[in-house]
Image 1 (spheres, rainbow, N blue to C red):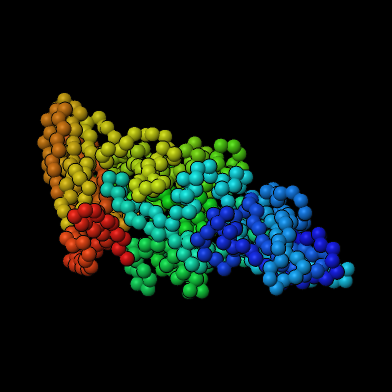
Image 2 (tube, one colour; image 1 turned 90 degrees about the vertical axis):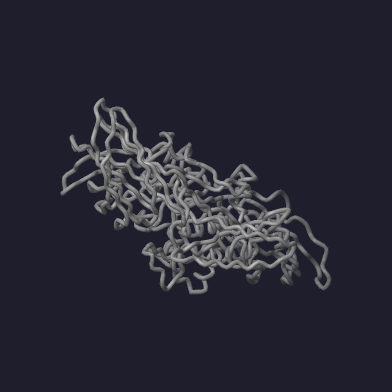
Length: 607
């Protein structure tokens, strides 16, 4: 409740109010955010002009649902940034057609105010009665430009990138064959901010206890957990339904989405029924849109070789048979890549040293406090292995740091076991601010454990083996790799080589074998041998067996196949180009087309 007590006249009426939307939104850096209300940032004053006729005393009501704040209006001084306040700046010249008095009032919210849609009302108190006049609505957002806001970000360049930018890059594939795709976050699209506000209103927290939810919306940690759950539809009326089956009938293939607006608008138009379908990069991109719209600096992160540790022991167990076929004996898995977001905020709940980037993941993997959500987990806590820190630090730590135990079995008997400490979290990346390039942020999550140059087994007493791609695989081209075998003893050995290839979804264990090869290898004392192999592969494993000692070592490599680049040559200064692609037997996604002329080239997204 905001109230005024500065006019001492017997009658009162409001003729009009000007919330000065254009001027205020420019000052608050919310220009471009489309909403049915004036969009403002907390911790900053805004001015409105009220044209009135006669009053004894009057006051203004500011409320968001059941929560209201009472704010006295003073004649002198500056608006406070630590509490709701209002100051009568000046009396304005009377506009044509209005008599007596025009007032300019500066109203300010604290940097700890709850975000949401507020209704502004003018309450008039006389000796005989009280009247209330509606003055309109404002939408209040977080303010990364305000030093006392818990989402304050020092750098203007980073604020521009992580709050104001509506385009980005998502990274997929594998560490040695990374694929980038553009994404339009669309937070400035008409209606998107209103949909984001509706998302907060539909959350289970709001439905269960509206007042408590509104009060908690001052805290970006709380907001992040709400949004993380609401972007997926597993527990609530969330935005996206996940689908990793390969059958996308009744919906849209996740790979076909290219922007968040289509998804959020489709959700709203369907009366907030889940949109079909999403996978990890879609969940992350939509969450990035919502968080940026709410004023919380956010970026999209891709973790390559991302572990999914289901039992919490921070070890991923992989089982192979003696021929190199990977077996589905473990609930744990390693995703070729996984995508989440980081949001920038203070973490006073963790004590000193954990402010900054926080991991939030909207992909429904595991439950956190009874709901499918993840985070915020402080990146600094992950780096320090502070697994007791809230929220979900052990799970995220395992995603980037888990050990991989490889077990070769035959007839339920363990033949060999090895540990790989470098495979998981091989590369953690995001878009570089101000460019369309990749930024490596691996060192923010983990200490340097050494680059994994090839997929090799740990050194044994007798033999070593590694698997090495010779070049990045491309659709339609042979895939070349080397199996490098080293004999560590001073005697010749007769070995058996078993190479196995299996199909694999990016987030699953391999399925059936579609190619395999078996042969003998003779290797001299202390010799390395590299028999080359070529074929179309997705997931490879090689088992080397010492015929005499029965010792076995394994190396594996998982990789994606990149779509070929397409170039269109234009030999005229002005020409319309129609690009027709016919792909036989393959599905090829085209994200961007480069148009070349004699003097310049342009790259366009494909709609």
